[in-house]
Image (tube, rainbow, N blue to C red):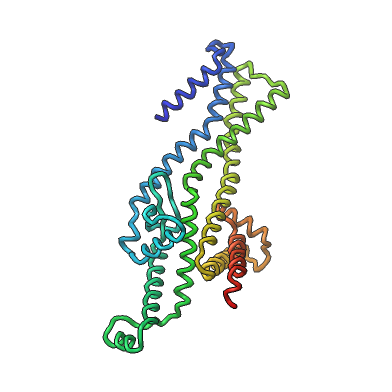
Length: 342
């Protein structure tokens, strides 16, 4: 199918310039325009093929991952409750185990991946919270009877520790739900294809205008055609380099929007505080890592740290910015519920 597509593209390009022939007189122009057409379509065509293959492989890979429901029903129940409270249907989502928190969506399915280790910790926290709530509802006689004859023990760790972990995981899950609600998976694939097309359009328009203003005519010798064709193909590399800052800017914007979705759907202030603490801790950890690599203590400025973070994780906002955004929602929460204390 791809070979036929390329053949059809070349044929259409040839018919567009129907005044050309295979004579030696028109050969330089044919080589020049043909090479420009190939160079201009190389990035969009390659991107389209790669995206199709990556999306197909990703869908097959996720479909083969084990379901959370089969191994941890309590985590599945917790996630379904959050999904429904976020205004979505739990039947539209599938929870899978993966290496890290992530979401994947297309026209056929919607998946959220939860790390296996995170699921085990979350399962323990949810179970301990359930036990603690049950213990609090027991009468003194029931607690005494359960301690003597039952398998249930009074929780030895403060519920605050369990709640902290659950609240943090809730915000991460809502972040991933936000990606799926906004259809970020499909939009990201479209953006990856649209950016090369936009770059080629700008380059074509700039080149056309420059040639017109400077009155540069098509080459009339084969040698000049080959030289200018080489420049056309050589331009693929800088065009490709232009792709990354544009796409990463878009990616950071989508991540910030998913953070907003999580904050707007926070059920308690403690969830917001857990998210804030997480991003502040991430910022501190990254700063310590950079300082240890530079063998410095506090010599790195915020600009240095932000530059290094963009190289480390260009597709996500800087943790301090994410923490500041969460802080705004905490302030709004306090202002909204200030009357509840009186």
